[in-house]
Image 1 (tube, rainbow, N blue to C red):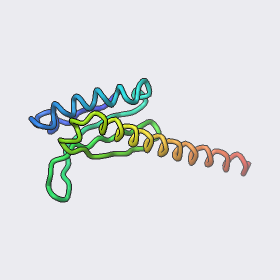
Image 2 (cartoon, rainbow, N blue to C red):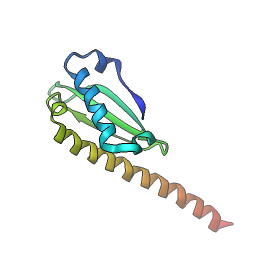
Image 3 (cartoon, rainbow, N blue to C red):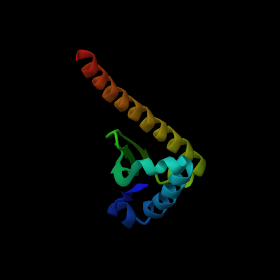
Image 4 (cartoon, rainbow, N blue to C red):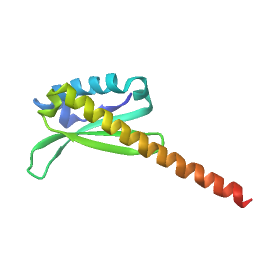
Length: 113
């Protein structure tokens, strides 16, 4: 797994330790496939100006997905796993779409020759 936990997250007394644990759980949940993605954690805010941890997954196809976690969500491993599976599925779907677009372009070029 490549990626980072942003400095703002690292320094945050509430989110920092929770994100570090969540990052470990993410790697366990996705398994060996975690090595095919870049994982980035940062801090964002919701419309109510609550501090949230933002997880961004991206890959070699330039696909990128994100989801946000409240501090409370980061303490509930069952909820975390569910959101990790959902965001992982979203990334795989985006990856498949990118690969299909790429493949379709190659097929169009080959057909035109």
